[in-house]
Picture (cartoon, rainbow, N blue to C red):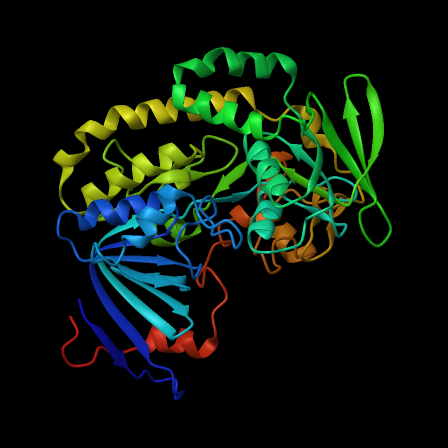
Length: 448
């Protein structure tokens, strides 16, 4: 592995840092960390790249007050000892044959690989409803991340709503940071939750985790079949309107954390030419039993393969790392664990599936694209995703359709973020000078 500076043709002072790896892992969450350590255990030269300055991803995001979980600390602290090159704060924006281009605090960077592991994780699913753009309304995972990063929530009246186990985890974090969490409102009905609880003993570890979370939240009411339908306030959130089986009521609060699940991050995979499985509501990376994508030398693991949770991400990451390092025999003991983890993920998907009512909250004048201020009625006027982008600019804002695209798919509407021309490099914003350096860089003497 070498690190070479080279000047491109852009005429600027920036230089491209070129790094060569036998195995390059993109994403430093639980799956990426497991993949990097597994590959390094076979003596491979491994690089681990992530847009965040600290490893851990969203699940193991560093908490300024309480640090990271023990399992995360062990794996993060062991990167250097394992010989893994940590490339934090680098956003991958371009992909070419056997090389990824990105930009970090030190300028543009080109990362060349023999084998690539995509552990790009997932992002939060947000559904539009009247008032969801008010200050004080966030995603459940978003508010959890803000609290970990030091955003003041102590003493704030917080309502958590939406669907799935993330609500419990978010509520526990917020309570730990001093928030007054006075309700968790789960859209799934009582029958769905009973079915989930009845099957949970098949996974004793998950049962223990659920019990531990409920113990931490023993004084927080948990309401099933309860749906947030509107947020009210003038300049900021003041009240949340909740719809239950017995009617509607308003609850005064300072913050609303509304999360509806997760969406796989597949943008890099799409640019690389990897086949996607679009059989569900949201596409995920398609792989074979050995976690190989349709692109030679590219493996994938974790939430990018479909939302599976922490345990699934860790076992798939380890498998992908072994495969990428050319050691398939090391995966034999992990295959059964992966099947068990994916079976649990299937159970979650069935029992916490969104009810049709959750997909019908937005009114005609509700914004569905927050970046470009596009209302639902404007999107409904067009049937073609490309036409939606051109006429309304939906999906053309800062998030590049990552928020509105997923929401529109849940609503059964054409998603501009998935049109034929939607995902094009650069995947993330990048300085023009850095783009020029990456695109016109000529290898210097000694580069391979």
